[in-house]
Image (cartoon, rainbow, N blue to C red):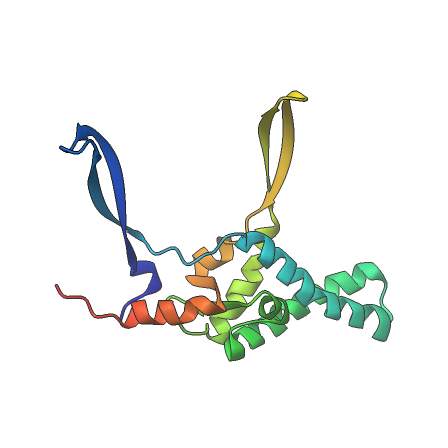
Length: 186
């Protein structure tokens, strides 16, 4: 059975040559190559960060107002709660409340919802995702010249790499399943 990590996408690139045809049109060379299938989508890190906040917010409020905990303990108690509840919902439906709002689904390397143990491991490892990386970037513009800024990025993919799971958009599922079921001729 095929795995998502084994899927390849065929890409074609056209590169202009120095030659022209008899009508004066430039002649292009075409190159074909295969790249690993890219299951992620644009802005996935930001959407996943917000999905995690949305998942934690109701639990935080429950601990704060119903169980009358102070905000610090409400936050601390909501972390293991969101890990356990997230693992259960990802196993059953492939998503959590926050991911559902952003139309994201968690799948394993075979295109199925992860089992409970894999999902629990994945959600526990998400704590390592919040280790920030700091970088510096420079922008040049006419009005202010060169400006240097600092950026903090949260890496939202370490847990998925270790568990061989993928966060994909709901509309990607049919394409992925089609690619996984496609028979290749050797």
